[in-house]
Image 1 (cartoon, rainbow, N blue to C red):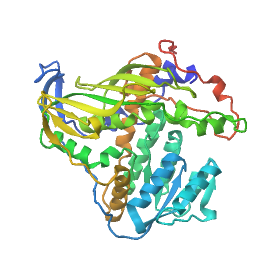
Image 2: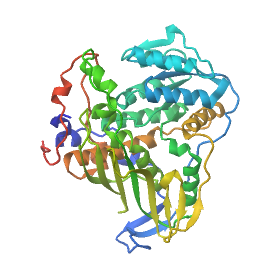
Image 3: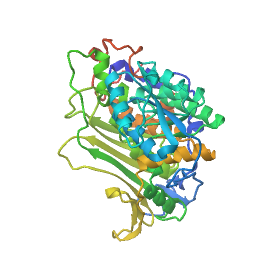
Image 4: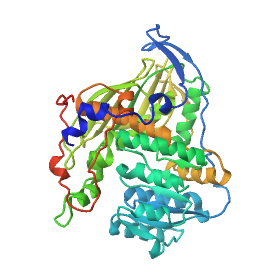
Amino acid sequence: MSESNFSRRKFLAGAAVVGAAGAMGAGTLSSCAAGGGGTGAGAAGSCNWTPREYKYPPMLDTVPEGKVLKAGVIGCGGRGSGAAVNFLDAGGATVTITALGDVFQDRLDSLREKIKNHESKTEVADENCFIGFDAFEKVIASGVDIVILATPPKFRPQQFEAAVKARKNVFMEKPVAVDPTGVRQVIAAAKMAEAAGLKVVTGTQRRHEKSYIELFKQLNDNNGIGDLVSANVYWNGGQLWYRDNKPSWSEMEWMIRDWVNWTWLSGDHIVEQHVHNLDVAHWYFGAHPVKALGFGSRQRRVTGDQYDNFSIDYVMEDGRQIHSMCRQINSCTNGVYEIFHGTKAIATTVGHKPQIVDAAGNELFMAEKSEVSPYVQEHKDLITCIRQNIPFNEAEETAISVMMAIMGRVSAYTGKEVTFDEMMNSDMKLGPQKFIMGDLGYMAKAKVPVPGTLKRK
């Protein structure tokens, strides 16, 4: 990543499109006045448990009957293929896929064949298969009811805005942006979607997973752990996939095919992957942190320009803290889970088993696991909300969670404390100025960030 992309000027300059107050989510699970003499060990201050209203997804096992809903898929790679199959599994004979778009013919052909071999026997006509950076516009204009956005995240804000302006319901994968400019664009489009009555589901499937919802209800509705004091969230796993360059590929083609390893395309793995855990923290706390300070490094990543580990401390407005850790390095002690510390007990999702335990480790509550995959359930919820006209729009909440991840990334890259307001007011916009399938000279300027070398401008 070029040094200029992370200058003080870049992330402090510019007028805010959306102020921090307007971007904040609903109220908190508890209200803590920092320094007030906590009610339990480690408490940030005087906490008073206050339940809040939360809009749960429909969570029906079978979608309601209705007219056949036509979807178009933009981005036919691994996640796009997964989302397409999940959508067909969710709706059965009541949904279909009628359009596909990608920048690569082989990716489109692969998904086209996959859904043709699906039990739904879905066939997409030649005239509804589009290739190129403008393919998303053609898919949106093809007469679909739902747009599935699954390209590399850099392209998500522009495509989401276009879908909303065309009055399409949307399923878009997380993360919804890679930089503050994109986050603000998504929030603005989310407000347009809400005003138009459109339904939007993002890829934060834990909010559609029965066990996570049941645990949230215990914390929120039943005061299950007392006052929520702090949290630890982790996505420590092995090396993610990568693509070696080929002589026949242009610079742009290699970067897009290798997109999870380039910050301008993925946001780095703290944004692209760890956002799941950060989103659970945002959801359970009901608020976002106001500042972040952390570090990271690049140890064994093979391609691209990003880190392979991060450790970030987030501080809430009332002084409570969230510690975030993520890693993509093989042969290490790994785990993907969240821990929420309360004044009475602890809520954990260790082993993907949401539960509450007391200080001695005795189980007080174990959430029931759903037989429906959350990757399918999120599409069931979208279809249900469309057919029953239930207001549902996750875009802004997910954008805030993405901003949490961006805060952590920028802090680690620069070695500086970063605030939510700074990021919301930043004009940072990652990536090349134009998108063409050729050589842009971008990689020659891309550098792995070195903390402490930030130039203040």
